[in-house]
Amino acid sequence: MVQLVDSDIKTREVLGWKGVHILHFMGSSCSQKLRIFLNLKGIPWESHLVDLFTNENFRPWFLGINPRGLVPVLVHDGAVHIESNDIIAYLEKTFPTPKLIPAGHENEVAALLKHEDDLHLDLRTLSFRFVFNPPGPPKPAEALQSYAASGSGTVQGLQDREKQVQIEFWQRAAKEGFTDERARASAQKFRAEFDALDKRLAQQPYLMGNALSVLDIAWVIYAHRLSLGGYPIARLHPRVGVWLDNLRARPEFAKEIGMPPEAMQRLETTRSAQVQAGKTLEMVAGF
Ligand SMILES: N[C@@H](CCC(=O)N[C@@H](CS)C(=O)NCC(=O)O)C(=O)O
Image 1: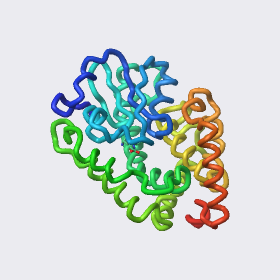
Image 2: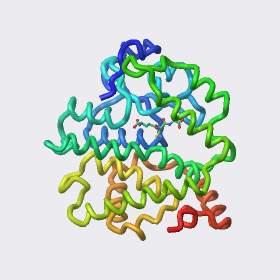
Image 3: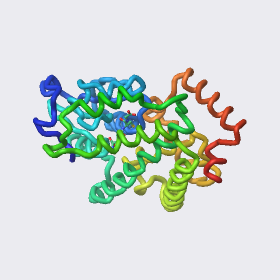
Image 4: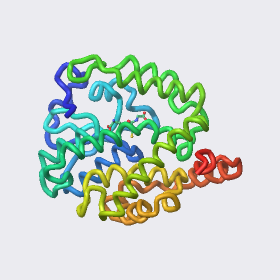
């Protein structure tokens, strides 16, 4: 569990927040995962939007809450929790029904979710290349300077390296873009993962057995995002395709992953340009 300690938190007002507060962004995959979990649990919560497009997460106020500068964040009765999978594990313990982590499988689920989180920068690479496709550097140098300079820089009282990993990711993106080579490598990792999920779904309706769990939520989000980027899920992993379509049609999922019409329009334009250039995800990955 990553619950911050007092010295990590510089934005002191959150210490007085009562109830469940979530700092999040509509289009963020980790925020979508957490919101779907909250919907399925029926937990009431208060929303605080942090706009990643305008780099609100790199400003001192937000870094004073999460020194890593990432969403989502949970503040529960003044206690600050970061890392989406840890937030979910904490909420599962605090609000035990309905169960979304099968009893007796807590460690297995935690390990599988850690594995999913380890692919986050691969998802980001493919999202920025094939879905968001910004015209220039995704994060301006001034925003990165504010990111580097703000917040306590510590997590649980210890100097934390994660912010530096993030800054290096954005600096490299500014320098070289999201190259074919990196996109291909990331897409191949997902192909191996989805092959494994397809095998699981040959035996059972959900990834952990007969009941929906957090693992389904986490992987639906990834599969959905990649399908928006043109990953041929149904062709390469037919069972994952059916499972994805069924789950993302449920209202608890659908309302969190829907895109506004302008964003859909932008994505259409991006897709057409990629088709014309022979640079769709399928083509670049060689699928
Ligand atoms: N391991 C973290 C990853 C969180 C993460 O990377 N969040 C993304 C959004 S999905 C973010 O805040 N990105 C910052 C940005 O785009 O500037 C978690 O699971 O909470």
